[in-house]
Amino acid sequence: MLQLFEEHTIKHYSYLRVTLPSLVPHLKLPGSVEFIEPEVSSAGAQLLWRLVDSLSGGARVQGEVIQRALPQLVRLAEIDSQIAGPAQFITLFISCQVTFSKILNDSQWCCNAPNTVQGNAVKKNITELLTQCLKYLMDNQISPDDFCRGVFTAMSSVEDTKPGVVARCLLPLLNTVNRIQPPKPNVNVRMCRAVLSGPSSSPDAPIKFTAGLVMATPIDAEIFGLRDPTALRVRIHYPDHQTHFCVPTFNHLRPCGAVGDYRLLTKALVSHGVWSEACYIEISLGIELSESELAHRAQYGIEPHLEICKPLKLYVAPKPVKRGI
Image (tube, one colour):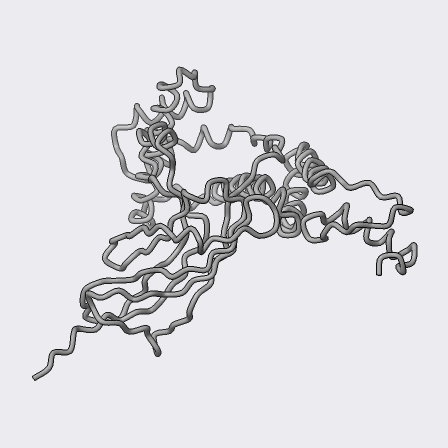
């Protein structure tokens, strides 16, 4: 059939193959057709670099460019799986800066009257981040920059820990800090992610099973960029904050597409005691850290498992065992 294609059809295929290499399959073209196979993600990588380079400039111009670049970065991550990881990282990076700028422009964020409860949670998170940051700098013998040094000095001099006092103490530092330019993306970095699907449930029709026994719930997942299949785990989180991890059967994991892409067809084993009413459980996929990775990160309080997909929520109702008379 390829020999019957007209010349413009081959050119159209060549264009799509260069611009969308992850979506257009490779075809064995006739020997008379001259076509150079594109490098992996060359077009997408060049576009990503151009978008990041365009973010340099004045504050006003930079804000306008960011608002235009964000949708393009999101779209680029969707159409080119090879650079989805770097594109999503840059998107998250500049989105955080946009949110940070909006917070500083709102004078209500340092008012402690109506937001004391929310402010206490923010203050706790800031304290935890500063503690982990300082510990990392000391363990690796890294001297902090002027901004970090100023934050540590300001926070150590605060005696009153009310959210409003902490906010007013940090405000001069935050207003003078310059916007950090996004780092140049490394297209060789891969992000492991998964898309999980399974049975549907609702409060009107919960999934019922006998308490104390095991219910097998079928799940179907597409996994991308998985480096070590043996580290894959099925995570089941219950309403009482119990979390169980299961190792999927190796035969249920089938390679598909590019290297590191798999499809998982397995069953999640759900079991719990009797509940007074039906509740939601969460089923997701995660990766178990290796011993070397865990030894390096355990001192910073990082969990030994990393989730790679949005959890699937099921409305279940464990029922007591029916005993005969």
